[in-house]
Length: 305
Length: 305
Image (tube, rainbow over all chains, first blue to last red; front, side, top):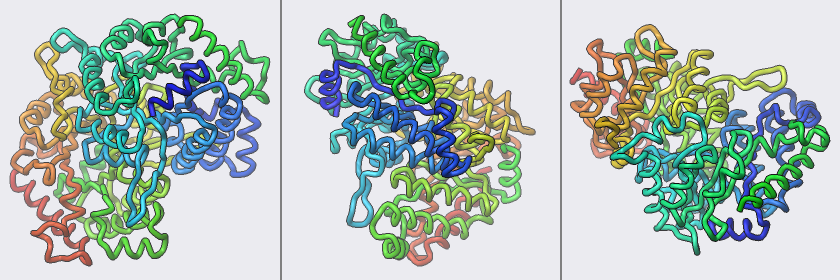
């Protein structure tokens, strides 16, 4: 799957991913109103609103970008109807030719990680049949439980040509609390990075591994070091835009081949119409604002490459 | 919520929790057959089978135990129908007076953890209304992202009288890979434990905090140390039974008040009928085998207290 992702990044000259993390207050009133008229102010209504919102954005930007990253929490918060909206979003994005990275941050003990892995990336057996329940292309994985918590995902990636991104150094302010702790003089995230390399060797694409990692744009110094520690690991980079990361911060996340990183923006794209610079589009044309924000982001990132 | 859990533990003299982690191969053939006859060999059929299986066990053991711990992965692996079976299970267990600990191991950056927290423990707003989508009593939380990833759960616990159990030292074989790494001579899990205490001080029940932790039964030496480091923290203890932990290993997870720990068994209870010692019950009476296994587990643990 990493080969497919790289091919799409190259075709579109866009090492970016749009985070489909719809808070209900990002959704224009007219979409909410239509959804609530049909379903009431219910979980079903909220789910319909975020699904229609997503669809508008995907239609507007799908020719510009290689991938989307729906954040499961934003769907799970609306219960079962939210999960149905998640699945519709995944299916629709795949129909539109986009690679889907589910931001799930799952991870458990071995036998339980198997269940997450088959549910999201692989197939589950039911009697004599088998099904791919969510069938995303990539999923993000939390490494706190160690190798036997991550390995089941790697095994499913090998079997089904899928991929994962393992959390190494996250973009949030307190990520350092545990991740930066020094072990024999080196931060924990470097130890995690070494394991990511080892896991990834089992599951290589042509030039990069199907086991990628997450390193926040908000920690460029660490990003530079981690890039060198993991030369064949694709880095999924959250934290650009709303969280404070700038294009200049991202240079060292890429390899000399111009590959090796894919930068996420969520709020900055999907709620672009709420920002002053895109306010001319108005609520009615929120998706066009997102398209403009995608074009600006691609230009911004390519300008520093 | 920790007060409620403790009260139920004391009423039933049973510091245990039954892990409702139904693999399809635990479900007796006659239940699978009935479900597949109604829904076909589909995800809906699998979900119906695990729900009927769960209901049988809950009916058989609900007067003996304080709490259940459904593992979300086991439901998520069957997609949306699986999630519906999860929700039915949660609702049914609450109807039966059981405390529900959702083993979700969620955790993300702040704004995203808010979404998980409201979806599982709190309420989400939709227009002028609000809903409690999954409404479990406790949820397990992964601390790798640090305070700003955990704090939103704590805040929701305060607002809605709920609780969490934060992963400190997990029961799996490779848990030590990162968790045992030494920082200034002390393992990472002790640093996490100190944070658990700090988070928990904000959210105290009468004698214990609503912020608990997870320490595997498979690491009794570490359990002993962690018990002392976190005197007011309830410990959720996985790894008893099938994973190798014995009652003798558990003594030091409890405080002198006889409280402070709740021991989970999943496979050992729900698939008891498959073990030689309970085989006399047969598939037909799988739930009675589970009841006997619960009685034996309670006696086993109380024998060492």
